[in-house]
Each structure stands twice: as C-alpha cells, then as structure tokens.
Length: 290
Figure 1: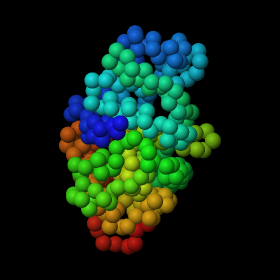
Figure 2 (figure 1 turned 180 degrees about the vertical axis):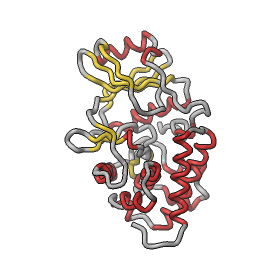
Figure 3 (figure 1 turned 120 degrees about the horizontal axis):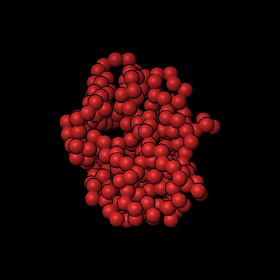
Figure 4 (figure 1 turned 90 degrees about the vertical axis):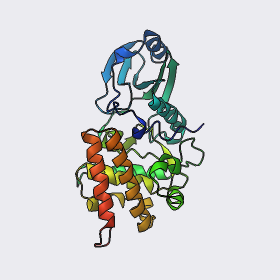
C-alpha cells in the first residue's frame, strides 16, 4: 500500500510540531520490552542530535549490538512515514541503513536500523563532501524504483503543481530520497556517503533529487549558481530541460512558502528564502547555467 504523500511530509505536521522529539523515557514499558526482545537488554541510550520528525530517535547499545531507533506514536499523522521507511528499505540497502526490526505495540511504531558510523556532510562551498553526496545521488539514480511502494511525485507535490503539464513533468520511475538536508547524509570513515531518513521517499523524474538538493545547498550558504554547479555533477540534472528546472524551482518555492507559513520557525523561513532565491535565479536572464 502506498503511503499518504502529505501526512509524512513536513507540510503535513500540525503548526505546533516544529519538533516532535521527546525522550526514550516516553516509551511504555511494553514497547521497551518488545525492543529488547530484538536487541537484547538496553545498556545505553544516546539521543539523536539531529532531526525533528520522530517522537523518539536514539542510538541504543545493548548486549548484542548498537542500533538506531526511531519511533512515532501511531495516533500522529506523521506516523505514516514509518510505513514508507519500511516499504522502501529493501530497495535502498546498502546505500541506506538496513532495517533490522519493527515494533508495533501500545500505540507506538518503532523501527530499528543498523547503526552507521559517520559524520554529517558539510555543504559549504568548496567542501570535499559535495562530490561525495553527488556520487551517492548518482548511485541512487541507478536503483530500480518502478516497484517501490512509495508516493509518486505528482501526488507528493500535487498542491504545488500548476496544472497537468507540471504533473507530467515530474512523473517518472526513479526512486528519490528528496530530503537532502546535510544531516541525512552520513560520511563514513572510508569516505562513502550513506543516506538516512527515507520518510519522504518518492517515485518520479530522476532530476528531482538534484533539484531538491539545490535548495538545501542555498540554505547552507551557497549561491544558486554554485549550488547548480554541484547539482550538475549528477547526470540526471544535465538530462533535464532548462524550462523544466525553471518550473520546478517555482514548485519548490510554493512548497516552502506553504511550510514556512503553516510551521513558522527559523529553519522553515530560511528554506523558504533559499527556494525563492533559486526560483528568482532561474527567472533572471544571464550567462549559461551549469
């Protein structure tokens, strides 16, 4: 079954849900016991530093192994994202972490993933991590996504598409990550990039991922021109017609305006501004773009 394309997205959260993050202690004893039936007795819990979209997110050490645990209460609209992560996982390993187990108990949906050693990617201009992220994005582009039970791009961005032509524009069978925040890109000790947090995985045109990345790069301080040069390292970007990228820049600007209006905080405001800067850059006459 395909997950609801909006409920698991940031735009589907309630206005108060700037961050959903709670504590490991919020888990009922029955849920902890179910987790321990898979992982063994919990010895240490290290809360995740990043992210906002899970009620519980932590690295858990047990007598058996270390595992990354993320959980949501099942009565929250964002809980549908758990199902998306489960559905997409067989398609993305080893680029993404392997799902080890799932616990559904006492009003909670909790996932246990293999623990990945790594640091957050650095998106500043000139960072050596940028080609690594582009390489991971290119690798993802080779994954067969036709059978992945995730939302289609024309569903995911339906409220922000201007009409049938834009719906056709985003269609495709490439498996997309779409959430290219630098905290979702882990650079491993051997110099590889692993992609985490597949809650907004989508199926659509291959150029969508590098286009989404542009907004995050501008948000990180890059100019739109520099951001597009990074995106051009991904073959799918070069295969897209300029008019298509122009139109999708406007789609993302509409999306981030909605998010910033309905979930106001510094991050969403800066992402709105970044998307608008990119859209304005695409509209402006100038030298040939990357």
